[in-house]
Length: 464
Ligand SMILES: *Cc1c(COP(=O)(O)O)cnc(C)c1O
Image 1 (tube, rainbow, N blue to C red):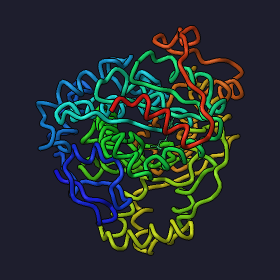
Image 2 (tube, rainbow, N blue to C red):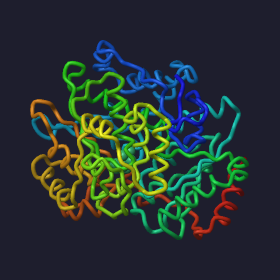
Image 3 (tube, protein in one colour):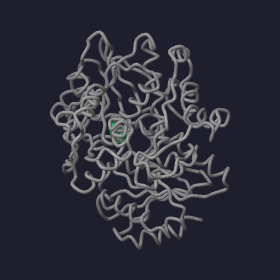
Image 4 (tube, rainbow, N blue to C red):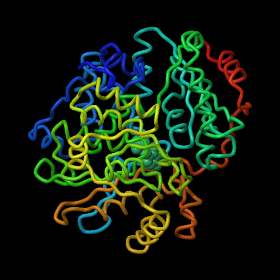
């Protein structure tokens, strides 16, 4: 399997190089040259198999020949051993024909664990082979930071620096990052906003001498390996509900379009998903695109579902390449227009294709709160606000009542205590493995929003 950049000007790479590169040198995102296919008989064969086995079988199609199935097996098996449900990504029935896909069973209780536990181990594997040490730098507004720290902890080949905006993440989110007692992990609270943190990361990557000296890398949401790992639970959920004969529809709360794109990849590989619903909150760039054909950046609004408060869906560029008939020149034209003018218009045929594959719905705060209450009242289940966004959109856009609908439940309710309290006037307890989170000692340094101070901090500790 070889990978090309969506913008067509970067070298073609194998899986390991794509893993370490993250973003392509032409500013594009890496995508497989062609989609590997899974036959109906192979899908049927996934029935009742452990999650890790299905993951190995699907991922090997993307990693070989760079990483063989044999090398992949212990990596993936170990990654999913730390989940708190034996099915790893279990389904829970909400109503007749309605299911939650519980993607909060990993160490940091958001769906980001499902990819990052594997990505951290793959990094370590490739870096050991190459006898290299790399420095991970990242900015987080909440969930990505803790999942990335968990993925990088105690790995000798990596030193990780994760910045969060001081006082602007929830206490649960902060403690999930600062209580990890690993010598190779550094938490930096920046006196500033999330945008300031992101600008610092960008500036460090923009300084070529620093980037090369520190061997900087990122485990952000545009890394192909993350999308690859997220494809797996679409297959396991579908198979549990009767695939390949009967495949459910999916509704996905989305910001960066990573999770929704993974569903699209599952479809391309041969899983006949009859309907995919994109669910957003008021930050609705993708829903507006579906309605108008115009991809236009708006301001970011703070909401009850903060992990999808995003106005530029980075992974959408991967779908756009397909919508543009895999024409990298056409894609470059669109993305240049977007970077210059903050918008572009899809062609009529691209819009028609997008509409044939996705439905979308923007969900209000009121609908989110009402649905959290309603689900609790009817089923006794406490859901998080992102899950509620998915449920509202999935119900509103459901096309066929004789096809089951699966809502991706992307986080545990305990991660968003304020929203939960506002909706149902009670607390959602943390799962057992995090029950003592508020008793664990914290490790974190505060730095001003000053690039030179942050670079000096990294330089002193990176160990390269
Ligand atoms: C990151 C995140 C999302 C959005 O995922 P994308 O891949 O950016 O679409 C949804 N819900 C939760 C809880 C998240 O942490």
